[in-house]
Structure formats: structure tokens, C-alpha cells
Length: 146
Image (tube, rainbow, N blue to C red):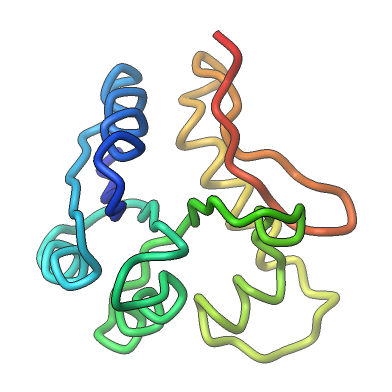
């Protein structure tokens, strides 16, 4: 899987990139939103891992700009914000903020895409689970306890 990590904190970026590469993924890294947008436009990435609080641009705004240019890769957000609600990506955030979809909230499109992404990341169950469902809230990305 080809993954683009957009993270301004070098230590965090190095940790995430190292873990993804150890699991056999091809990883590109950008330290700014502008560099991330540039790499994403020509990269053909399967998934984006985006810092929610990039300097100069919010991660959600960056992904919206990517959607406007036709980039449709699923996006996972990293955050250091304090509350549980700040660490969880909700269905509404994914539907409206990332995919710019406004439709029946009972539709299972989010669950379907998250399930596919989990399958790709776990490579048939050989790798630890990274995406976790937070009941009643949404999804969270958590490093495995290895």
C-alpha cells in the first residue's frame, strides 16, 4: 500500500513512517500542507495520514482542497488535541469534511470504506489492528502494543 504521511512534527512523523515501512508499506512524507498537496496530486496514494493541526492550514481544510483537485484517497487524521471527541474521527467528519457528501446518515458508506481500509492495512490479519471503532463516536488510529 502506498501511503502519504503529512505531519509537521519530525519525531511523530519518523515514528509513524518507520512503523508503516516495517509493515511493508511504501510511504511518502511531507512536513507541510503545501508539500503534502504537491505530493498527493501526483502520487497515486492509497491512503493519506494527515496531521489535524498543521501550521498554516488545518488538516481538514487540506483534505478538502485535495478533494477539490480530484484526490479521492481515504484520509486518517492524527491529532494531539486533548479531549476524546478531538481524537476521534466521526462519521459526519468523514462524510461532510472529507468526502463532501450530504446524504442519509443511516447509509453505511463510511463503515464500508473503513472496513476495506482496515482489510488493506492488516493484510489479511497478519498485521496488528490500527483503526479502532469508538462506539457511538467514530474511529481512532492507535498504535499496537508490541
